[in-house]
Length: 424
Ligand code: CMC
Image (cartoon, rainbow, N blue to C red; front, side, top):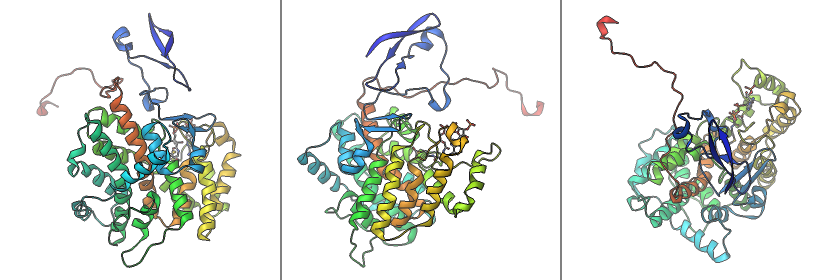
């Protein structure tokens, strides 16, 4: 893995190569040898771990899960198959997929007492707040899968998290609208079951629309994993201390909520609603470019992609499919398309390489399906759970794994002595 080194000060440091992507300088001995730390707030040049799960080439706009391009997976695969792939490294055979899907479907119910837990939240609570609380509380209900040193328990916890997340998310929605919880129905697909638990009511049969089910499944695939993003790094950091998987995923959900990360899908649709009609776009483009205005085009720009986010390409196509299936349209889609067109021909966005990201079009689809904006990030969390647990498992199994403990560039006062209050 290493055949070169680089000199920093008086010492040589190994340069490590992955299968593809930039080489990394192994600076683990830097402090011991030089007494210096590296400084990289935001981790713009830091590989925090070794991983074989997901690869992004931001310049080319490429995203691979275990080597497979996201576009191919979105087109031909299913969320269950992608989940198996992420967890196990290879695409499943027919039997393996059936067995995996069966296992997941047998973990969809929640401990009944958790239903009481929901009732402790205000009805108007943001569903992401509910998600953080309920997922964190899972470790109080599933004690038999919190021993992280036992691979069997780790696997059961992973299956439980993937299986229960749609139930938890749908219940968060039902609670907010004052409708009864709908129990899972295990002969439905992962996406179909989620749609029924969200939009079905006990008083009527719910028929899953196959086109919407397919779109939902594809949206889940597009969000399944994304390398060492902020929430995944949060899950890894929380897990590095030995915290149980439910606590770690709750930490990931909390991080995902922020508008710079998963919260951008909600913010993007709110922005489109605020812009309204295409004639107002120039005003918002001008604001996004104004250094004195904190406004940013939500759903635009990415730390890694300096090209079109390949997930946004699929998402844009899926908008039309959902509109056709539901026989609806939304003028905000036209506004979004026009906004993209104007931004992509504007020097500011060209120079800074700002392109639509996964969140730009997802809100239009989710809104057409019937989700309120507050549920958008919940859906991101639901789908990203498989990536989080796959990354968490990979980390726990890594013999090089240590507790994550960054250092700092200290700029506070040097040592001084306490002054009694009367003398201050
Ligand atoms: N609108 C206007 N200007 C922007 C935008 C934007 N959406 N994004 C970045 N810029 C500008 C920014 O002002 C900065 O300009 P300058 O160099 O003159 O100071 C430059 O582009 C680089 O931005 P940055 O904030 O230093 O870049 P970053 O890598 O730290 O941030 C980002 C990446 C995604 C947080 C940022 O692009 C952003 O805030 N976008 C809007 C929120 C969003 O859509 N987030 C979803 C990300 S994709 C889903 C996910 O994986 O979570």
